[in-house]
Length: 432
Image: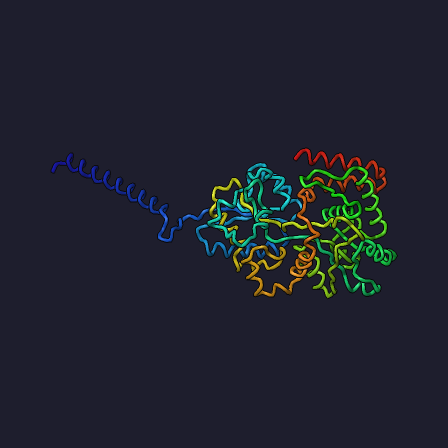
């Protein structure tokens, strides 16, 4: 064989060798993408979830996510979380830029903000093969339904509850206040000591004012469609009552109240959501204080109760998610899995899901303060109505507070402040 022929054969051999190498690599890449016998992909599907809360909520939520990933190795979950302050503003940015998480903890009021037509979140009815909707009643499903689309599912139901430092009340020979007059009676004793009866966040103050207005006037503050039913004269009278509450030490001024004042006894009571019971009831009890649950303040012969109930936050799926099935599996785990329920316990209130409730019955559910508060809520069910979402609208609440401050700090009359509040709230509503 001459040299020229040998060179040709060597070149052919090298070409075949390289070709076989390319074929081998292509086969490996194809096999890498083919689902294995269990139907899982080698590379997991990446989804993201978001929530807000305190350190305790972050801890058990992350523990739950880790458990979910152990059971679903084909799904990788990233998360972003934070405290409530500022979270709503970040959510607005995410929603408007379409960068929201696949699975989202949302406030009930956000359904009205981001999904008036039902298109703002994924329709969970389309994912019923992955979400055990049978754990919810038709009424519970209706809370998250907009325009026929199931946008979200409630974690628990919420209403306001009042907690008081029983030890301080006992030291003054006072009883737990039940009426508005009782609040002033207690305040009269506490005022010389520099103490206040109630310390409130601004949202709870706004809802407390609505309750008094509706009880005293027999007229709703908001109409069912979220528009204002109150007029300037009504707001004027409410501002004057608000000032009386502050001056008589029934309510600690908003800008000076801090939860440490409640823990130390400078403020002896608070109004909070049932879902915050761990903070305001159990937290104070852990310091050795006896804590008493109070009643909803009422006026005699009031035609309206003025008190409302609502879902205590909800889980929803982004309308923009690229992985709806994986997101649905995670949402179902968060709401219905017994082990997740045992991690969460009643930290967000008594769960709505039947499966979660059954799991917690084994954990002494009926002995929790949240359960007792829910029982009281159920006893007043005829007097409680589903909250109007604008009652929780931060812009509306800020409009009330800023106008009220002008009057409280003597920068304008109650009549002028009422006119500004009315104008600013109506501007928020018209811009929705």
